[in-house]
Image (tube, rainbow, N blue to C red; front, side, top):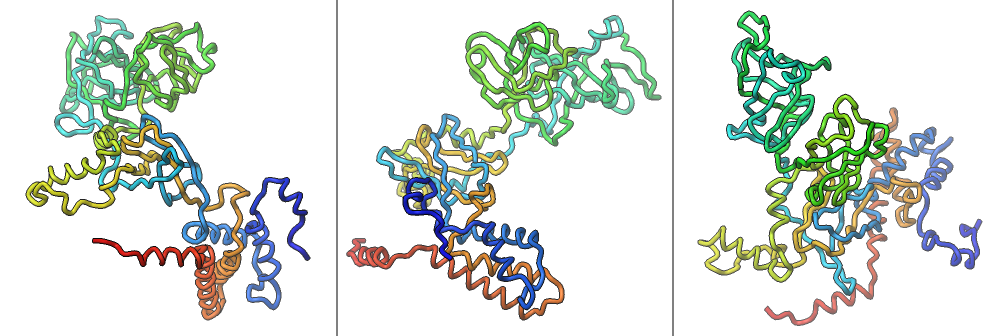
Length: 478
């Protein structure tokens, strides 16, 4: 029975070119069930579910180091010098920038830098915020006493943070379980409102040694600490932006997309994806679009008890990924292509003056090039590029596990036998009462089949190899 089921004309009129070199994973599973499973066969019984599982695992393993990777993604590197990893990314094979002639120039991994987490750390080395809070006496209304004015602007203080005072023993002014309800920043001063864990508003009280509480008789200023409730550290101030905004409209139902307005140029430091930290919006609400005078948010689920519209207030926006000093220095370094070699040479001179003696002995070849460099931040899932790659076209050649879509789940015919042997070995090794010599036999057959597939897929051509050897025979001057 012929394997081709279409005429040459139908093939050239279609769009599935070169598909004959592949076998779908579904066909491999069907053929394995027909040929390898049954009475008087080594695998007497196996469910299709088991075969499908081991077939997918075999395809994934072969995709990592045997099958040829054809996946690539091209982008123009933005001013942020970052590229988001593809959805089905597992590892890269090569990252290059492309010149005006379409020639790829390889980028080299920068193994000597990274983008570590950048938490807020006070002068004492503690990962908490300490501020002086002005507490009001019982002569004020409850709503006024609920607001605590701090001695400066603290962009790191966010709704949900736990509030405690520094009074020793039971003599405290802040009740246990108090956290920040709202944050207001105005004219360099931060004001917070307080709420208990049960959802009720609270205000400072005085507690004696016996634990009994009483209202404050007079105004008092005390040191307060703010710590993060959901994370061990607090984000650095450089990752937050405070902007005065006006929420347009008259009621929350009119905010499909939550549009906030501001003065011209006030949103220059805001970017799409930044989170809004004000308590009126659900956690995770972020900017979906931003221009000179308007911001659009991802959620319109606003708590009407927090803000009455229209209203003008200071909103805190957070960067979704931290920007450490290491990354800031790396991306701001002036590594233009002609000077890239000199940059590393100068650093070698600066740090090893006694050893280099104004020469470039020992310079690492991967640094003596002007193509640029990169590193991958596994936490944020982004590739970070050196400054000389800004605006360049970059191609990411990468490998996946070939299981992302149905169209990807196919195997080159050079590796078809390796798939059958891998499935057979996986099934037999997982069964009980199978003689060890049979398991070892299929283990060896799987190894041999994978080795054969690698040789075939290496695509070595005699004429190309001969040409390379001819080039090696040229006289090389030293």
